[in-house]
Image (cartoon, rainbow, N blue to C red; front, side):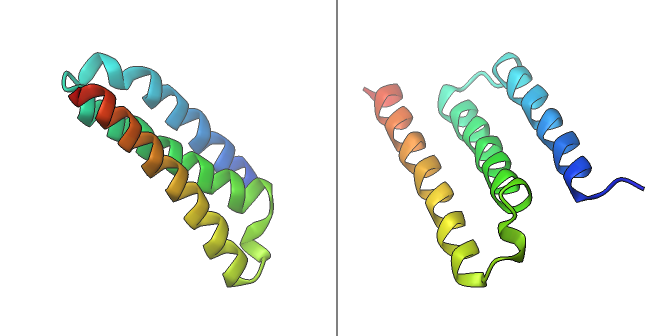
Length: 86
């Protein structure tokens, strides 16, 4: 029976492979960037919760770090949207 770290590791590999395949299947750059950054957000959250062991931390810390990951991803998407639309 695989433990949580093994499942996270397999999920990270799957998301990395999906990240490689997205540009081939998504023609619109804004949608492609959003999808790639959504994968990055999921990967970041999995790393933070499982490998940095914040899953056992108080809810405040999990929320703050998850909000930080989301803020970084949203900023990156906004930057890519501005570049794409200009």
